[in-house]
Amino acid sequence: MTNTVYLLLGSNLGHKAEYLKTANSEINLRIGNILRASSIYESEAWGFENDNSFFNQVIEVSTKKTPRVILTEIHKIEAEMGRIRSATGYSSRIIDIDILYYSRCIVNEPDLIIPHKHLHNRRFTLVPLVELVPDFVHPFLEQTSANLLKICTDKSLVIKIQQVGY
Image 1 (cartoon, rainbow, N blue to C red):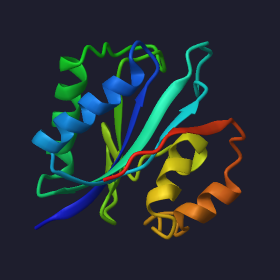
Image 2 (cartoon, one colour):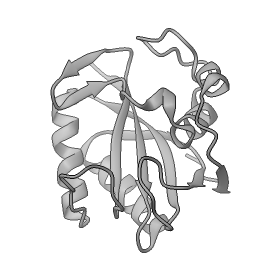
Image 3 (spheres, rainbow, N blue to C red):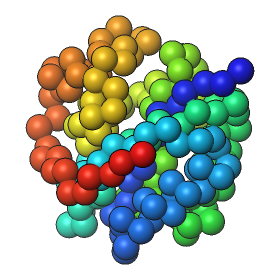
């Protein structure tokens, strides 16, 4: 069975646009066919103080892999690209890949929560998500992506910096 997964990619170190491009390539090879990609957006750090802005992008992937297998592959991709995970919370990173949605499934496990638990609180997630799927309904909150953005209390600046087309 094929499912559609929405992934958020982010980077705030080094050659950020190149890291997003590399992550796209690895995801396409290892997780599934990328159907569409949002533009790349620049935003300030969320959840921690940092002068390095983030580049973010949401991609839509067609996959036959389970959420658990996808998470394992994501962690491998991040590690191979040089990501070092911090045990103390949010920090700068070469690449970060989050599972936002897996079709309309809800997963609630200690190390895997889908939809992503902070999705509705982050403009840097919602703005590119709305570009791709404004009418997608969050399976738990029962709100469209566009409506979640309208009611989001995060007021951080999110700027489109690069148009991407798939």
